[in-house]
Image (cartoon, rainbow, N blue to C red; front, side):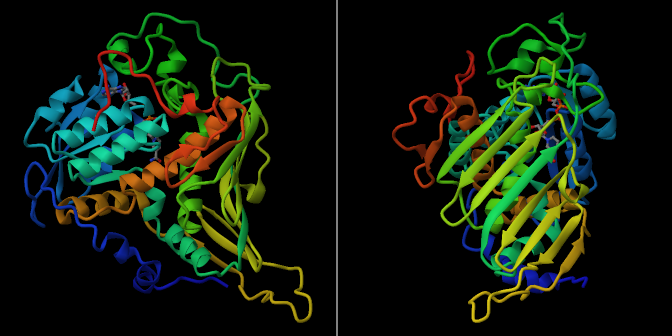
Length: 445
Ligand SMILES: NC(=O)c1ccc[n+]([C@@H]2O[C@H](COP(=O)([O-])OP(=O)(O)OC[C@H]3O[C@@H](n4cnc5c(N)ncnc54)[C@H](O)[C@@H]3O)[C@@H](O)[C@H]2O)c1
């Protein structure tokens, strides 16, 4: 049975109106914007995703790209051309923040720069669209939330699946109990890059047009390596080095665990255990090629799995989310969702309502990335919190960072969700909650 839920009805049931109600931000933007005003946008980090973000901002009827900033001239030139030639170019993001006529900045840098650029933008009175994952260490995320609140800024995180109609409907079904009681959720990314992975280039001089020291910013000083910088014709490979990111666990895991925590209405796990390693891929990356993380939540278990040396997958999809309930199972990814009723009959007289959930499927039907930016711009004007508000993005980033904390410390991490602290007894894990910033950079809300 193919089912489309009525969207307005769904929004009501999902409480999406209520997400923003009562949370209006009183702070004004650098300029107070009316419904018909054009929003002036600056891009910081004009690589592949930043430029894609900028293009969908430019397509909105009320946004105008006025500044583009990058420390790598070839990317700056490309993005400037894509911006339509009206924007000014910069190499130092602080000059973008100094411009009083800019309302909004997009932060599309590698992850290790997100926190600083976002926090400084908040201090400068800008609203921010910051890419996921929001940071590299949980302590940075706390400062980011503080900065948004202290300076009363609207901050949307680039977890655009929250703006996909079919994800919203899938989440509502889980929350309404359509699958019965959900006790197990599986998430995964599988691929096969054996044996070469991303290769092993030697350290070298940086390419012309790159300010390597500015690219490193708050991260430790290192000789240039093409994989650490990572810009090439594939997704940039900085993702696989601890100084700048957290591997697949944070890069992709956040898109999956964000939906899990939303659907299951939780802010974080109580305990995290991980097993994995760099087993077979022969490259100079640091993050594991094989990883399994198990999350203990109050009433269910969730797992995240990543394999880089075998692409065999479930449902023939290299990534996805599976919710297992007492009445049905749901598979969901960016293409749509499908509900499979439980086949094992309920025992006579049992409390279980067997096959209560008829099979159901729905295909993706909107441009979530465009709509995510629309939601942000509407909130910039209304001063409401957006659908992927920074606090939500922080919690979705944290669950993934905790997977890496468990992996790197080789400890079962017991987590206090409310206090956002490791409980006693995990002394080896503490060190991974914070990052040391290279001088002269400091992070302060
Ligand atoms: N929302 C999504 O679905 C999605 C998809 C892909 C990537 N992303 C995120 O987008 C971010 C960028 O990823 P990417 O693959 O586009 O990387 P990329 O390497 O292509 O782009 C990053 C750019 O930032 C520039 N940069 C570095 N330091 C800078 C600084 N101080 N000031 C200005 N520019 C600076 C780099 O030179 C580069 O051009 C990452 O955080 C990634 O996780 C999100």
